[in-house]
Length: 118
Image 1 (cartoon, rainbow, N blue to C red):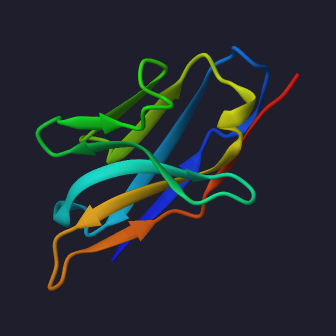
Image 2 (cartoon, rainbow, N blue to C red; image 1 turned 120 degrees about the horizontal axis):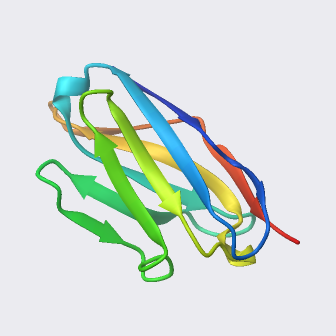
Image 3 (cartoon, rainbow, N blue to C red; image 1 turned 30 degrees about the vertical axis):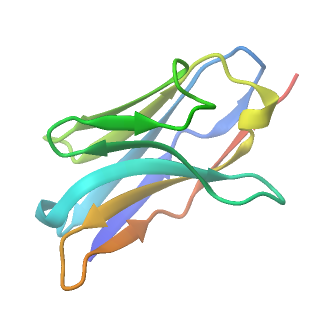
C-alpha cells in the first residue's frame, strides 16, 4: 500500500503562483512514477504532469512552460510548481503514484482544491 497526502492548494489570483506538495508513505520502493492530475467541475480528469524514475517528465499541453514537477526522493515528496495561473486551472488536483505489483496499479491522494479567481 502507498498512501499519498497532498497539501498546498488554495485561492490565488490570475497570474499568481502556487506550489502543491505530496508526501508518499508505505511501500514507496515500489513507486516507479509519480504525477499530478486534475479534475474541474463537469470535466474529465486530466493528467497534468508526470515524472518517471530517472527524471523523464511529461506535461499536458495546457500547462507546459507554466508548471514544473519535481521530486525529492530523500523526503518521499513530489511537488508541482504552478506559475502564471489562469482561471481555467481551477480544479481539484490529485497526486498519484504508479506502483510495481502483480499487477501494477496506481494510488491516488485525496485531492487539494486550487481556485484561480480575482
